[in-house]
Figure (cartoon, rainbow, N blue to C red):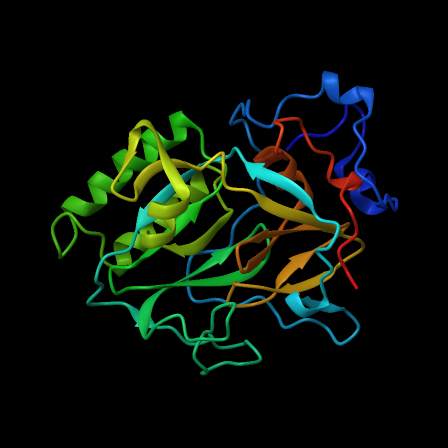
Length: 292
């Protein structure tokens, strides 16, 4: 987790000054480029990868949705982060994709950002970076994306996948218990920022990194020509986005728009994952405010 020397992370993001326009102070010349990731990351400790839920937002906390956002002054950004893609096969032992016990919608079907059911059965997992529940369908079309993965970690993940695949009831394809074991292993490597997507998205929007990725599996990165749009949020609260439960943020956050989808990214992860469209580094505090 990158911070200025002697400057605690909390103090960096506790108060985000209003900045209506994008600035590039000279100090950017001394900041590491977003495309040069060391992979030496610090992550929060993950909860077990079971069907758990984060508590519903307290009544005193604000919950923001896409309808509350103002993207008119959003900055154009590109993602330079390397991500590990885990395809989810046709699971015979997938769980029902329903909000788990303890969630305010417990027993109801889990919906995507368009308010459509994600699927009938699959895998429910936890993203401890956002304190949110995630779900991916188990019909062969879904994937789990692990964010900010370096080449060394990718090699370890591929080796673990091969080990689990050999023990699977469906040879070569992870069953539900295998996916959960893979999630646990990723957590042991400090990789806790993960979310659901589809094989179709990977084919259209991402490219393999060397020979470490192929066929929607392994190490990938976003296409450099694929522009996203970013704004910042101040304070703390929840964002009701594509995750099965609201993404939690404290001390500010960033909203990234990718086509029609809006996703919350924590400030430190955003700075490691994204840069401006001209490849210069970004300070999340200088992004335009994005709430109407």
